[in-house]
Length: 595
Image (cartoon, rainbow, N blue to C red):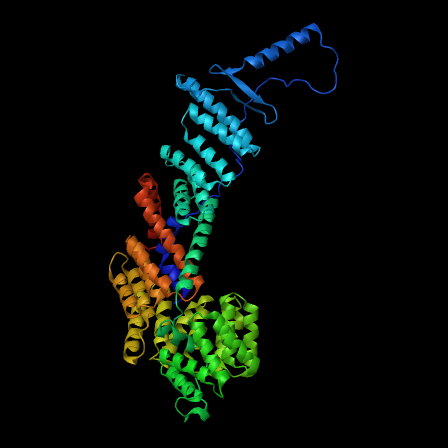
């Protein structure tokens, strides 16, 4: 399925994701912007060198100034002055005396303690600031004072107490953004990512999703959490082959399997026999049997060890046994290099973004077999991905020249033109390709995708139906992507209907290992606001993913959706904000014709 098609028809997914994957700001760590300065007009006591004697009037003025300083009070309590930190606060031994004061005087005392605390906080004297904010609370209960204490604890790396103080602030004022952010930061430090995401997300909702820094922070935390979950999934999962359709698609990108003549009559139970049986099974698309026999061929030893290792490396690559695959490839390349080994390693390099290394393998493969259409095709795909469009088209054309029956090379050459802006040319060429390969599932499917992108929905559905019919009659494994694509077309035709969900469900039943089928169904559930069902389907998609990188993207959506559920259940005070955001997004979707 082309990326552009899905992007266009699933705008509701991106919009929904934006409402949940909402970032946030990092924990306030410096107190910047939170300082309050207590101004006074007193002069410090002169120090240093002897000055000239004061006259009578000057002595009188100085005496009065000192008396004024000594007599300065708030609510009857004298002030303590800390010259070093320019801080001033009430000197109270027994706070029981404060309880009887009028509310206004209590507030004055509390503010004085808070302002002094801010001075110490700014000078990184966090314990002293903590004490002063605590004294402010003895005068007046205010969520700001609890939040400031949380900031102190965060700076002291006492994150449990930072959370506790934030809890107290939020118990008084649940929509206190600064406290939400501070608590989220403490949760993140403790690696409690679900709680961090709830608080960060809540803070951004209160900001109407308009805080870029917050957005980036939530995206970062989602990524960290998703990476953790994906790593756990793959560490606990036994290696396994993907669906037969996925395996067949990869083998379509390789040169046709050829069985060496000298093993056609191989004796049973020999390495040559197992290799022959394995290669025959690949041709017959019986991949479990193929892999089992290829492994036996390597274990039993065979005169065609390099060939057996090359195909075992393919299956290991498809099973996400990356290290084993690379070991087999290295042995082949060190002894008897094959084009397959170079292509497997090129795919491994492309999966980690090492394009330069992959390109070397493509060149090495062509040095072994200059007439390999598969090498030109795979290199064309890599070049198109890396924006080397002109070179990609040359490689597609060379692949077609070497093997005119190479259907995928024809298809991707045309799709490439479509992506490059030559849409009418591409559509015309697809019409011609239908006459050349009338019974190709891939031709009908890819043509349907382009028609879908053109919003020619009935024509697209007709192509998907034809592809499904051919697939059924072929006796081959069911291709779930055909049903996925048809479900997307059905959604565009009637977003409020149920046909698209039925088709996506059918895709998951026909191919339970199809990540695309499960993730599409999940996103349809999101659109229907069946959030619990959406999460279950997305978990299935993650379990079917073929790499940790794929799983990370899926877990990002899962954690975002989980956050959405909890916010709705646990924070009803955000409902009005959430509904306003939702209405805005629905309006945007309607403007795009998606809702």
